[in-house]
Image 1 (cartoon, helix red, strand yellow):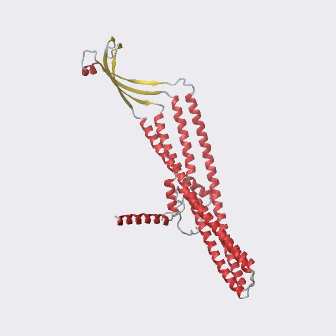
Image 2: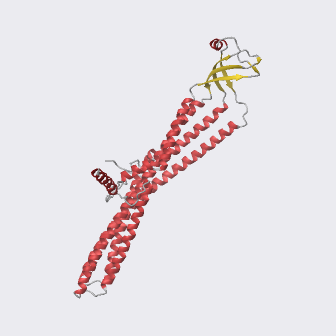
Image 3: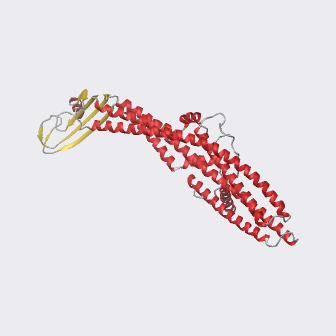
Length: 441
């Protein structure tokens, strides 16, 4: 018994430790967000409703069939359902009927409703896919922010360890009489400032993790972490062979924003056609059967059912003449909705064109900015090395040396920021070109 308890205790502890050691990749974050996002779940339900609407539209082609039965005990003066005569007595009666009807012509409304249900399903599918793309981009942005914050923290910690080494080295030079005693104060102030930056960056890193956790609908913020990786700078995407115009052509084929707007226009057009069907006459066929029995009739139950049964078969024509302008009102509303959908389509086309050109220029500028930042780091590193050599031999004071250290640190952090901005902007441009956000190996 004790061994079993110890086993289960160790088992649950191992589960907890494994959960704490779990580090998420970008692919895992995107997949989890898509599966658990509330908006996506709601959109998936809308897609399920589209299936129901399609089933209802198919049902419009089928005949209806209804049956009913009635058993009653009558007292006083009542019409005997079997003899159709008034009888002032108590008697029991039974009646049953079955009726079927089928729409022969409804202005093609059934066919149009079926087509609309298919279009609406396509539109809801596009909306769901668009929502997934938006979530994926949001997750990627949050993920890269965490990666940047981690790299920034690493730069600050590395620089602070160098500062601590310089403090120790300065103490030795002061003891040897090479440097004045006051130089240690500037380095200690630099060390305190760097430690403050480290604390602030740790807090920023925690906030960025919490932000991604909220996007993923996770609650355990304290143990959440992503894999430790340094993303490589991508090659320039298509800048030599692609133009904004060619990327825009691809975007119109792959980006769901435009597909949603186009499908909305098609649905709106079909709504206009369906509403106009109400102007046309409708023709339906019907078939009915009924029978009855009464206790007061001198025939047994089975004989009465066969003796008093009847059938009805025929056609029904309805011609709309005046309906209070209700049909006209529906048609006008449908036309207005169509115009609104067409305006929204035009706006979506303008937005897509603007976004593609903006994304293209953003990649070019981000690339140039990142390359310039790299050159700045190289120059600051050389300046720092030269300053350190001079400081070590007493040819530079602590203040000037700390300024050189700070300049290198800022250049490294700025290069990191520009690096991940360039990576994300490249992802956006690839997204418009139809390249998936996550490349599965």
